[in-house]
Every structure is written in C-alpha cells, then in structure tokens.
Length: 162
Image (cartoon, rainbow, N blue to C red; front, side, top):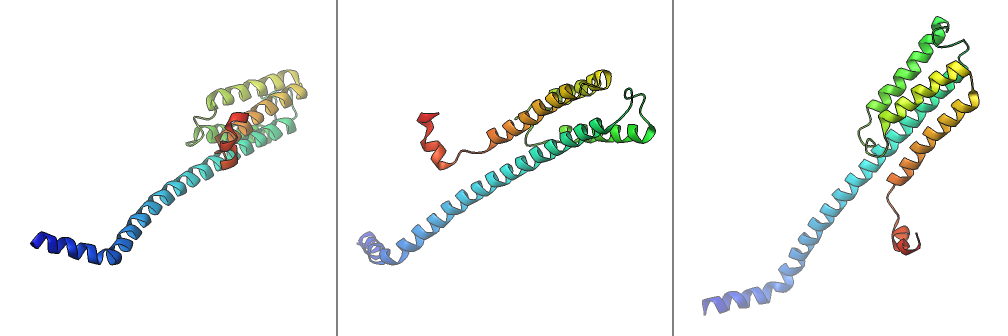
C-alpha cells in the first residue's frame, strides 16, 4: 500500500507542481530559442557591417584613383602617390580581414580584378571602363549582401512562386 499512497499523493498534489514544472520547461525552451535568435541576429549584423566596410573601401579607392592626375602610378606626385597607396592598402586590409562574408564573395579575385582595372585606367585613362569595373564590383557586393539576408516569413510562404 505504500506505493499506492505515494501515487495518491502525487495525484493530489499534481495541480500544484504541474504548472511549476511545465513553466520551468517552457522557460528553458524559450531561453534556448532566444539565445539562438540573438546569435543569428549578431551574425547578420556582423555581415552587414562587413559588407558596408567593403563597399566603403572600394568606393574610397575608386574616388581616389579618379582624382589622381598623372601619366601613371610612377608619374604621380609624392602626395598623390601616398594617397593612392593608402587607398589600395586600405582596400586590401578590408578585403583580407573579412570573417563573416568570406564565403559570400570571392574576395581575393575581387581585389585582383580591381588592381587590374586601376592599371588599365592609368594606361588608357578610360574613365568609362574604370566606372564599369567599379559598378560591376560594387553590384557584386550589394547582391551578395542581399543574398545573405534571411527570408521573411511571407517570403518563405511564397516559395512556390519563385
């Protein structure tokens, strides 16, 4: 009869401890889900910041190259040469220090393409070609940033339309 008394006691006290136990389980589940969502939000914020920094460095390099006057890199005045090297070094630093977007873009290829574009510009002074290369690279960064955004609930529900 001892086990029947224990079972009877559990049955009688169930209205008291059942809400407490289910509340603790629910709180634990909510904690795990919130922690996961916060980590995801942090990763997305970090990616957004890296995409922004990359686009800013590319834009600064583009504006710097367009502002330089001279027959080529070797013919630049020392202050202009310093500005040029600083902008290229800054872009290289930004490209090589990306941690979160390294899988979204081919960063080293991007850096090499931009270097070739600058060399061609100093050789031919074809501003339209440099502009086209800049637009291509900046569009790649913007498209990669857009692809890395998570889909909203509505977009997930409309999967059959895309």
